[in-house]
Length: 200
Image (cartoon, rainbow, N blue to C red; front, side, top):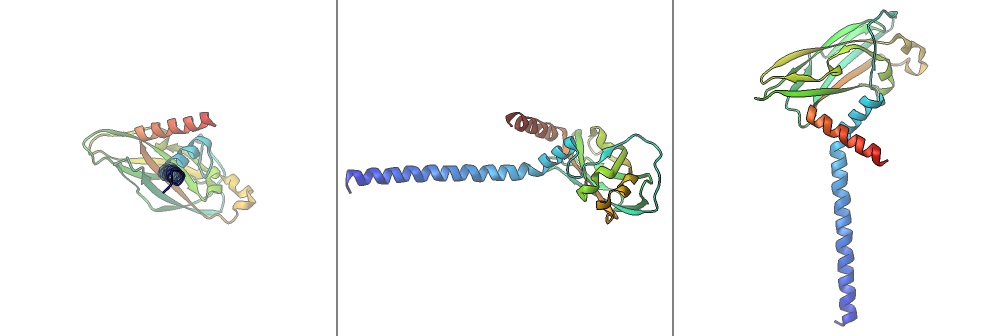
């Protein structure tokens, strides 16, 4: 093989190695983004109110309409959160404007105190702005001692102004979902979101 042919072969090998490294970097980056996508989206929704995040309201009287709605409850935990977390009721039936209270239960099975925060949203997303919370365990951090089990309330109603939104006439069921994160995971995600915002 001539020197020119050897040089060409080496150049091709170098280019192939670079291309392989680029593809590997892209693949690892995509896996990392997929791993972080759900908690980052939850944090984004909590901060901006986008994607079905509920509104927070002061206690007060609102008109109660004849329209019925079923509220379903869901719960999950971030991969780093060892708590057991679940709703104490599957669903509730109420009138639009009627105030209700629902309970979630959290249990810390570990041998150490853990502080967590909950993100939340409502589906379908377009109904989220009409889901009004008067009081909720998600407004503050929750600390559970080793082996502690707590029942946590959320006081809410469906805002009667939903009746003025013709695009929501077909909504007779909504789902309220919470995800609990450790404080450390929440802080890390907040820092990541801030860093991404500053870069843009």
